[in-house]
Amino acid sequence: MFTLNYPIEDKIEINGKSYAVNMSFDNVMRFFDMTNDDELSDADKVEIGVKMFLGASFSCPFEDLEAIYNHFCTSLFLPKESNIQLDRLGNPMPTKGEEEEEIVLCLKHDVEAVYASFIQAYNIDLIEQQGKLHWLKFKALLDGLPEDTALMRIIDIRTRDLPSGKGSEKARQELMKLKKQYALPNSREE
Image (tube, rainbow, N blue to C red):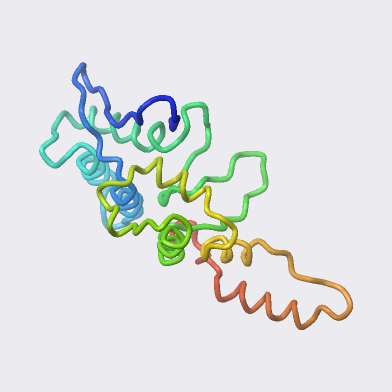
């Protein structure tokens, strides 16, 4: 949970012992990439994922690794009061009973626009912040990007309704062209 009145909790307790967790935004993004790697077995993903957060020297029985991995997949990436599930890239999954919400942002696909927007809005070079900027801070800044940034303009194009009515054909064609140019891959996992 991200609050301003308490420090960010970046430790996990396992069997009565406290461990530091590498929650830098780039590490979390690598975790999402790793979980999407079809060449890795589920067991490999569990072991690699835990070591990404706790360090290569961390070891424990596999059953404990699974529990730790599941903890990272749920409680560390979501507010504690949230029941939202994430896909392998950290994007919200649709919930049962609701229409599938249109995906308008993919951190992997939109990486250049994210980078440019952080420079534009905050003068933060994300390359220089690798290993430093906490995932929760990154998410808060990402969620707060102003409308005039590169990423938010792309999201606006993706979500804008096509104009209709008499005399709107040219604007409609231009927006359709932009929507095609900035479209996300069809797969939720790309």
